[in-house]
Image 1 (cartoon, rainbow, N blue to C red):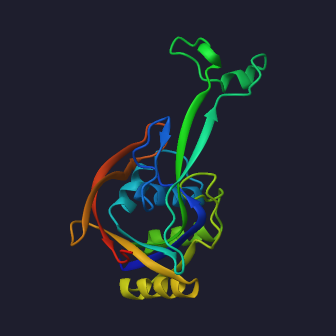
Image 2 (cartoon, helix red, strand yellow):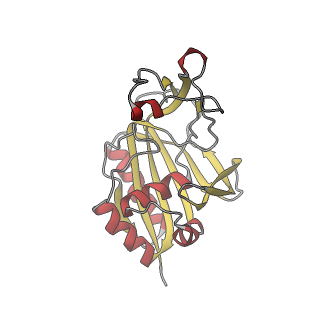
Length: 233
């Protein structure tokens, strides 16, 4: 079975790729996670269950990321957004009452139970994601991306893509990368950093973002990636 290279383009004013978040602080990684990208493909397919076999197939494939920022603009810092969860609901309404956080005993908390949360977003970046995969699953992904079952988001539902995500299938990595660089040049963007799987020259990071099982009981395993910086100013 031949190998193909699937090119995705992820661009939006805001993106958020959580990998180590707690309830009150929803962090974002600096680039799309493997679990986030595979979750996006699952949304396109309309898959909502554990997807263990499908994930086992895709998780074994190599994923690379090229990160681009605007050419004439320094990279913007992460945006911190302040949220209140559970406020403004009607206690007498059965359904709205269920949305108000309670104590572990199910009682109403002191002060009403509203939770304060902070959520972080990547601003004005574009990411080219290159998946090296077998032809059959790539073809299935292309069909889904061209006619997605559910809406597609870049890590969080507030992060709506502002560009077409599917950008082609190529026979070689070099051809796929060249297409991504050409697209970035057309959009006046510079390559800021790239992320490759495994240990290479650069900053090596261990991530727990390889999905083993989606659904209610999500499970992940680790992988090591190398981040190589291309712009240092």
